[in-house]
Image (cartoon, rainbow, N blue to C red; front, side):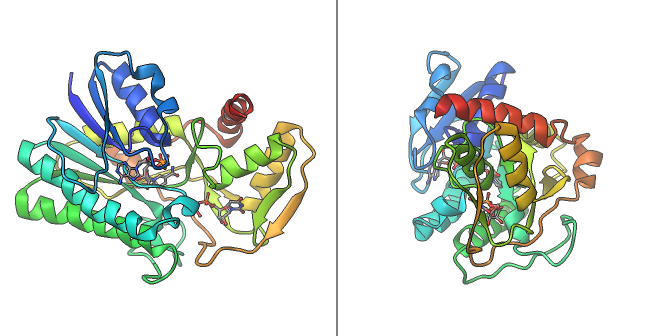
Length: 310
Ligand code: NAD
Ligand code: UDP
Protein backbone atom coordinates (compact mmCIF):
# COMPACT_ATOMS: atom_id res chain seq x y z
CA UNK A 1 0.00 0.00 0.00
CA UNK A 2 1.31 3.43 -0.98
CA UNK A 3 0.16 6.87 0.09
CA UNK A 4 -0.54 8.83 -3.06
CA UNK A 5 -1.35 12.53 -3.53
CA UNK A 6 -3.39 13.56 -6.58
CA UNK A 7 -3.52 17.31 -7.15
CA UNK A 8 -6.62 18.11 -9.20
CA UNK A 9 -8.06 14.84 -7.87
CA UNK A 10 -11.69 15.97 -8.00
CA UNK A 11 -11.51 16.72 -11.72
CA UNK A 12 -12.40 14.50 -14.64
CA UNK A 13 -9.15 12.53 -15.00
CA UNK A 14 -8.15 12.91 -11.34
CA UNK A 15 -11.33 11.34 -10.00
CA UNK A 16 -10.95 8.26 -12.21
CA UNK A 17 -7.35 7.99 -11.04
CA UNK A 18 -8.55 8.20 -7.39
CA UNK A 19 -10.97 5.32 -8.08
CA UNK A 20 -8.32 3.11 -9.63
CA UNK A 21 -5.65 3.76 -6.98
CA UNK A 22 -8.15 3.12 -4.17
CA UNK A 23 -9.27 -0.08 -5.92
CA UNK A 24 -5.62 -1.17 -5.97
CA UNK A 25 -5.50 -0.84 -2.17
CA UNK A 26 -3.62 2.47 -1.82
CA UNK A 27 -4.25 5.46 0.42
CA UNK A 28 -5.26 8.47 -1.67
CA UNK A 29 -5.01 12.15 -0.78
CA UNK A 30 -7.17 14.11 -3.18
CA UNK A 31 -6.27 17.80 -3.28
CA UNK A 32 -8.44 20.24 -5.23
CA UNK A 33 -9.60 23.86 -5.20
CA UNK A 34 -12.83 22.90 -7.06
CA UNK A 35 -12.30 25.41 -9.87
CA UNK A 36 -13.40 22.89 -12.50
CA UNK A 37 -13.57 19.80 -10.31
CA UNK A 38 -16.58 18.71 -8.30
CA UNK A 39 -17.37 16.85 -5.10
CA UNK A 40 -19.85 14.79 -7.11
CA UNK A 41 -16.90 13.15 -8.87
CA UNK A 42 -15.48 11.71 -5.63
CA UNK A 43 -18.52 11.63 -3.34
CA UNK A 44 -18.63 7.83 -3.45
CA UNK A 45 -15.09 7.72 -1.98
CA UNK A 46 -15.65 10.04 0.99
CA UNK A 47 -16.61 7.27 3.41
CA UNK A 48 -13.56 5.17 2.54
CA UNK A 49 -10.95 5.35 5.35
CA UNK A 50 -8.16 5.16 2.74
CA UNK A 51 -9.44 8.32 1.02
CA UNK A 52 -8.90 11.90 2.18
CA UNK A 53 -10.15 15.11 0.56
CA UNK A 54 -8.16 18.32 0.96
CA UNK A 55 -9.58 21.62 -0.27
CA UNK A 56 -6.50 23.60 -1.17
CA UNK A 57 -5.15 25.78 -3.95
CA UNK A 58 -1.82 24.32 -5.06
CA UNK A 59 -0.36 27.75 -5.87
CA UNK A 60 0.06 28.00 -2.06
CA UNK A 61 2.61 25.75 -0.32
CA UNK A 62 1.31 22.80 1.66
CA UNK A 63 3.05 20.16 3.76
CA UNK A 64 1.72 16.62 3.38
CA UNK A 65 3.28 13.17 3.57
CA UNK A 66 3.16 10.74 0.65
CA UNK A 67 5.16 8.29 -1.49
CA UNK A 68 3.92 9.44 -4.89
CA UNK A 69 2.38 12.58 -6.42
CA UNK A 70 0.29 12.82 -9.57
CA UNK A 71 0.32 16.54 -10.43
CA UNK A 72 -2.92 17.09 -12.35
CA UNK A 73 -4.11 20.42 -10.93
CA UNK A 74 -4.85 22.74 -13.85
CA UNK A 75 -7.99 23.46 -15.85
CA UNK A 76 -7.76 21.51 -19.12
CA UNK A 77 -10.53 22.93 -21.29
CA UNK A 78 -9.62 26.00 -23.42
CA UNK A 79 -12.76 27.79 -22.12
CA UNK A 80 -11.70 27.31 -18.51
CA UNK A 81 -7.94 27.85 -18.82
CA UNK A 82 -8.55 31.08 -20.75
CA UNK A 83 -11.10 32.34 -18.19
CA UNK A 84 -8.30 33.51 -15.88
CA UNK A 85 -5.07 33.01 -17.84
CA UNK A 86 -2.81 34.47 -15.15
CA UNK A 87 -4.19 31.94 -12.68
CA UNK A 88 -3.61 29.18 -15.22
CA UNK A 89 0.08 29.93 -15.60
CA UNK A 90 0.45 30.44 -11.83
CA UNK A 91 -1.08 26.99 -11.27
CA UNK A 92 1.32 25.43 -13.76
CA UNK A 93 4.44 27.18 -12.46
CA UNK A 94 3.86 27.87 -8.74
CA UNK A 95 1.69 24.77 -8.32
CA UNK A 96 4.33 22.55 -9.91
CA UNK A 97 7.09 24.13 -7.78
CA UNK A 98 5.04 23.40 -4.64
CA UNK A 99 4.41 19.82 -5.72
CA UNK A 100 8.08 19.34 -6.61
CA UNK A 101 9.08 20.86 -3.26
CA UNK A 102 7.08 18.15 -1.48
CA UNK A 103 8.58 15.43 -3.68
CA UNK A 104 12.06 16.73 -2.89
CA UNK A 105 11.45 16.94 0.86
CA UNK A 106 10.08 13.39 1.01
CA UNK A 107 12.06 11.71 -1.78
CA UNK A 108 8.65 10.92 -3.34
CA UNK A 109 8.13 10.13 -7.00
CA UNK A 110 6.19 12.76 -8.97
CA UNK A 111 4.37 12.48 -12.29
CA UNK A 112 3.48 15.61 -14.23
CA UNK A 113 0.30 15.62 -16.33
CA UNK A 114 1.68 17.39 -19.38
CA UNK A 115 -0.14 17.73 -22.66
CA UNK A 116 -0.05 17.41 -26.42
CA UNK A 117 -0.38 21.22 -26.36
CA UNK A 118 3.38 21.41 -25.75
CA UNK A 119 3.60 20.61 -29.50
CA UNK A 120 1.40 23.64 -30.31
CA UNK A 121 0.04 23.66 -33.88
CA UNK A 122 2.48 21.01 -35.08
CA UNK A 123 4.17 20.81 -38.48
CA UNK A 124 5.23 17.18 -37.89
CA UNK A 125 2.75 14.26 -37.96
CA UNK A 126 2.27 12.18 -35.96
CA UNK A 127 3.99 13.88 -33.02
CA UNK A 128 6.94 12.07 -31.44
CA UNK A 129 8.41 13.06 -28.07
CA UNK A 130 11.60 14.36 -29.73
CA UNK A 131 9.65 17.05 -31.61
CA UNK A 132 10.08 20.46 -29.91
CA UNK A 133 6.77 21.88 -31.09
CA UNK A 134 5.39 25.03 -32.67
CA UNK A 135 3.80 27.05 -29.89
CA UNK A 136 2.71 30.68 -30.08
CA UNK A 137 4.28 32.14 -26.90
CA UNK A 138 1.99 35.20 -26.80
CA UNK A 139 -1.42 33.91 -27.90
CA UNK A 140 -4.61 33.10 -25.95
CA UNK A 141 -3.55 29.45 -25.51
CA UNK A 142 -0.04 30.25 -24.28
CA UNK A 143 -1.00 30.49 -20.57
CA UNK A 144 -1.68 26.77 -20.83
CA UNK A 145 0.86 25.69 -23.48
CA UNK A 146 3.77 27.67 -22.08
CA UNK A 147 2.63 26.91 -18.52
CA UNK A 148 2.84 23.19 -19.23
CA UNK A 149 6.18 23.62 -21.01
CA UNK A 150 7.52 25.49 -17.97
CA UNK A 151 6.22 22.68 -15.75
CA UNK A 152 8.15 20.13 -17.84
CA UNK A 153 11.25 22.33 -17.53
CA UNK A 154 10.82 22.48 -13.73
CA UNK A 155 10.46 18.70 -13.53
CA UNK A 156 13.71 18.18 -15.44
CA UNK A 157 15.61 20.84 -13.45
CA UNK A 158 14.48 19.40 -10.09
CA UNK A 159 15.64 16.03 -11.36
CA UNK A 160 19.06 17.27 -12.56
CA UNK A 161 19.69 19.60 -9.63
CA UNK A 162 18.07 17.73 -6.73
CA UNK A 163 17.73 14.14 -7.95
CA UNK A 164 13.95 14.23 -7.63
CA UNK A 165 12.33 11.15 -9.20
CA UNK A 166 10.23 12.70 -11.95
CA UNK A 167 8.00 11.40 -14.73
CA UNK A 168 6.44 13.39 -17.57
CA UNK A 169 3.35 12.11 -19.41
CA UNK A 170 2.11 14.10 -22.42
CA UNK A 171 -1.62 13.48 -22.44
CA UNK A 172 -3.56 13.78 -25.72
CA UNK A 173 -7.32 14.52 -25.85
CA UNK A 174 -9.06 12.26 -23.33
CA UNK A 175 -12.81 11.96 -22.80
CA UNK A 176 -15.35 9.98 -20.83
CA UNK A 177 -17.86 10.10 -17.96
CA UNK A 178 -17.47 12.94 -15.38
CA UNK A 179 -16.42 15.59 -17.87
CA UNK A 180 -18.32 18.64 -16.62
CA UNK A 181 -21.51 19.51 -18.52
CA UNK A 182 -20.10 22.99 -19.12
CA UNK A 183 -16.56 21.74 -19.75
CA UNK A 184 -16.44 23.26 -23.25
CA UNK A 185 -14.29 20.56 -24.83
CA UNK A 186 -15.46 19.01 -28.02
CA UNK A 187 -16.71 15.58 -26.93
CA UNK A 188 -18.77 16.85 -23.99
CA UNK A 189 -20.09 19.80 -26.05
CA UNK A 190 -21.23 17.61 -28.94
CA UNK A 191 -22.78 14.91 -26.73
CA UNK A 192 -24.63 17.42 -24.52
CA UNK A 193 -25.82 19.39 -27.57
CA UNK A 194 -27.04 16.23 -29.32
CA UNK A 195 -28.83 14.92 -26.23
CA UNK A 196 -30.61 18.24 -25.77
CA UNK A 197 -31.51 18.38 -29.46
CA UNK A 198 -29.51 21.61 -29.86
CA UNK A 199 -27.32 22.57 -32.82
CA UNK A 200 -23.87 20.95 -32.88
CA UNK A 201 -21.26 23.72 -32.94
CA UNK A 202 -18.38 22.80 -35.24
CA UNK A 203 -15.63 25.42 -35.07
CA UNK A 204 -14.24 26.26 -38.51
CA UNK A 205 -14.99 23.81 -41.33
CA UNK A 206 -14.41 20.80 -39.07
CA UNK A 207 -11.46 19.48 -41.08
CA UNK A 208 -9.12 19.84 -38.07
CA UNK A 209 -8.28 16.53 -36.41
CA UNK A 210 -7.89 15.20 -32.88
CA UNK A 211 -7.23 11.72 -31.49
CA UNK A 212 -9.55 10.72 -28.65
CA UNK A 213 -8.52 8.43 -25.81
CA UNK A 214 -11.05 6.89 -23.44
CA UNK A 215 -10.42 7.76 -19.79
CA UNK A 216 -9.87 4.17 -18.54
CA UNK A 217 -7.06 3.68 -21.04
CA UNK A 218 -5.49 6.98 -19.96
CA UNK A 219 -5.62 6.10 -16.25
CA UNK A 220 -3.96 2.77 -17.02
CA UNK A 221 -1.21 4.59 -18.96
CA UNK A 222 -0.60 7.12 -16.17
CA UNK A 223 -0.28 4.39 -13.53
CA UNK A 224 2.06 2.36 -15.73
CA UNK A 225 4.19 5.46 -16.23
CA UNK A 226 4.36 6.12 -12.48
CA UNK A 227 5.26 2.48 -11.76
CA UNK A 228 7.90 2.24 -14.52
CA UNK A 229 11.60 2.18 -13.67
CA UNK A 230 12.86 5.40 -12.02
CA UNK A 231 15.37 5.82 -14.85
CA UNK A 232 12.53 6.35 -17.38
CA UNK A 233 11.58 10.01 -16.97
CA UNK A 234 9.76 10.52 -20.26
CA UNK A 235 8.36 12.63 -21.69
CA UNK A 236 6.09 9.93 -23.02
CA UNK A 237 3.05 10.45 -25.24
CA UNK A 238 -0.19 8.90 -23.98
CA UNK A 239 -3.16 9.02 -26.33
CA UNK A 240 -5.12 7.14 -28.92
CA UNK A 241 -3.38 7.14 -32.31
CA UNK A 242 -6.68 6.97 -34.26
CA UNK A 243 -7.19 10.38 -35.76
CA UNK A 244 -10.66 11.83 -36.47
CA UNK A 245 -11.85 14.97 -38.21
CA UNK A 246 -14.01 17.09 -35.90
CA UNK A 247 -16.76 17.05 -38.55
CA UNK A 248 -16.79 13.23 -38.50
CA UNK A 249 -16.97 13.26 -34.70
CA UNK A 250 -20.06 15.51 -34.95
CA UNK A 251 -21.73 13.10 -37.39
CA UNK A 252 -20.87 10.06 -35.26
CA UNK A 253 -22.32 11.69 -32.13
CA UNK A 254 -25.53 12.61 -33.97
CA UNK A 255 -26.00 9.08 -35.28
CA UNK A 256 -25.15 7.44 -31.93
CA UNK A 257 -27.53 9.61 -29.88
CA UNK A 258 -30.29 9.11 -32.43
CA UNK A 259 -31.19 12.81 -32.22
CA UNK A 260 -31.78 15.17 -35.12
CA UNK A 261 -29.44 18.01 -34.25
CA UNK A 262 -28.14 20.18 -37.10
CA UNK A 263 -24.47 20.93 -37.56
CA UNK A 264 -23.73 24.68 -37.46
CA UNK A 265 -20.35 26.32 -37.98
CA UNK A 266 -18.74 28.82 -35.60
CA UNK A 267 -15.44 30.68 -36.09
CA UNK A 268 -12.31 28.62 -35.50
CA UNK A 269 -10.65 29.88 -32.27
CA UNK A 270 -7.24 31.55 -32.66
CA UNK A 271 -4.25 29.15 -32.71
CA UNK A 272 -6.52 26.07 -32.80
CA UNK A 273 -4.18 23.24 -33.89
CA UNK A 274 -5.17 21.78 -37.27
CA UNK A 275 -3.91 18.26 -36.74
CA UNK A 276 -3.02 16.23 -33.69
CA UNK A 277 -2.05 12.59 -33.47
CA UNK A 278 0.32 10.91 -31.01
CA UNK A 279 3.11 8.55 -31.98
CA UNK A 280 2.86 6.10 -29.06
CA UNK A 281 5.72 3.78 -29.98
CA UNK A 282 7.69 4.88 -26.89
CA UNK A 283 4.75 4.09 -24.56
CA UNK A 284 4.30 0.73 -26.28
CA UNK A 285 7.97 -0.12 -25.81
CA UNK A 286 8.64 1.26 -22.33
CA UNK A 287 5.25 0.76 -20.66
CA UNK A 288 3.71 -2.06 -22.73
CA UNK A 289 0.76 0.33 -23.07
CA UNK A 290 -1.73 1.05 -25.81
CA UNK A 291 -5.40 2.05 -25.75
CA UNK A 292 -8.04 -0.69 -26.01
CA UNK A 293 -11.34 1.19 -26.04
CA UNK A 294 -12.35 2.39 -29.50
CA UNK A 295 -14.23 5.64 -30.10
CA UNK A 296 -17.62 3.96 -30.57
CA UNK A 297 -17.41 2.00 -27.30
CA UNK A 298 -16.06 5.01 -25.39
CA UNK A 299 -18.74 7.30 -26.81
CA UNK A 300 -21.45 4.82 -25.84
CA UNK A 301 -20.35 4.96 -22.19
CA UNK A 302 -19.96 8.74 -22.33
CA UNK A 303 -23.40 9.27 -23.87
CA UNK A 304 -24.94 7.02 -21.22
CA UNK A 305 -23.30 9.13 -18.49
CA UNK A 306 -24.44 12.46 -19.95
CA UNK A 307 -27.97 11.15 -20.52
CA UNK A 308 -28.23 10.58 -16.75
CA UNK A 309 -26.36 13.79 -15.83
CA UNK A 310 -28.67 15.95 -17.95
P1 NAD B 1 -10.30 19.05 -15.11
O1 NAD B 1 -10.49 20.52 -15.33
O2 NAD B 1 -11.52 18.19 -14.98
O3 NAD B 1 -9.40 18.77 -13.83
C1 NAD B 1 -8.48 19.68 -13.30
C2 NAD B 1 -8.64 19.69 -11.79
O4 NAD B 1 -7.65 20.55 -11.22
C3 NAD B 1 -10.00 20.23 -11.35
O5 NAD B 1 -10.56 19.40 -10.37
C4 NAD B 1 -9.67 21.61 -10.79
O6 NAD B 1 -10.61 22.05 -9.83
C5 NAD B 1 -8.28 21.38 -10.24
N1 NAD B 1 -7.48 22.61 -10.12
C6 NAD B 1 -7.30 23.58 -11.06
N2 NAD B 1 -6.49 24.53 -10.60
C7 NAD B 1 -6.14 24.16 -9.32
C8 NAD B 1 -5.34 24.74 -8.32
N3 NAD B 1 -4.72 25.92 -8.51
N4 NAD B 1 -5.22 24.10 -7.13
C9 NAD B 1 -5.84 22.91 -6.91
N5 NAD B 1 -6.63 22.32 -7.83
C10 NAD B 1 -6.77 22.93 -9.03
O7 NAD B 1 -9.38 18.53 -16.31
P2 NAD B 1 -8.84 17.06 -16.67
O8 NAD B 1 -9.23 16.79 -18.05
O9 NAD B 1 -9.18 16.12 -15.60
O10 NAD B 1 -7.27 17.32 -16.67
C11 NAD B 1 -6.42 16.89 -15.62
C12 NAD B 1 -4.97 17.19 -15.99
O11 NAD B 1 -4.62 16.48 -17.18
C13 NAD B 1 -4.69 18.67 -16.25
O12 NAD B 1 -3.43 19.00 -15.74
C14 NAD B 1 -4.68 18.75 -17.76
O13 NAD B 1 -3.86 19.80 -18.21
C15 NAD B 1 -4.12 17.39 -18.13
N6 NAD B 1 -4.54 17.02 -19.50
C16 NAD B 1 -5.80 16.59 -19.75
C17 NAD B 1 -6.18 16.30 -21.06
C18 NAD B 1 -7.57 15.80 -21.40
O14 NAD B 1 -7.87 15.66 -22.59
N7 NAD B 1 -8.43 15.50 -20.46
C19 NAD B 1 -5.27 16.46 -22.10
C20 NAD B 1 -3.99 16.92 -21.80
C21 NAD B 1 -3.63 17.19 -20.50
N1 UDP C 1 -14.44 22.22 -31.17
C1 UDP C 1 -15.59 22.33 -31.95
N2 UDP C 1 -16.77 22.59 -31.33
C2 UDP C 1 -16.89 22.68 -29.97
C3 UDP C 1 -15.73 22.55 -29.17
C4 UDP C 1 -14.51 22.33 -29.81
O1 UDP C 1 -15.54 22.25 -33.18
O2 UDP C 1 -18.04 22.89 -29.48
C5 UDP C 1 -13.16 21.94 -31.83
C6 UDP C 1 -12.01 22.86 -31.44
O3 UDP C 1 -12.00 24.02 -32.25
C7 UDP C 1 -10.81 21.98 -31.68
C8 UDP C 1 -11.31 20.57 -31.35
O4 UDP C 1 -12.74 20.64 -31.44
O5 UDP C 1 -10.43 22.01 -33.04
C9 UDP C 1 -10.91 20.08 -29.96
O6 UDP C 1 -11.23 21.09 -29.04
P1 UDP C 1 -11.14 20.93 -27.47
O7 UDP C 1 -11.59 22.22 -26.87
O8 UDP C 1 -11.84 19.69 -27.08
O9 UDP C 1 -9.61 20.67 -27.12
P2 UDP C 1 -8.19 21.08 -27.75
O10 UDP C 1 -7.71 19.83 -28.36
O11 UDP C 1 -8.37 22.16 -28.81
O12 UDP C 1 -7.42 21.55 -26.59
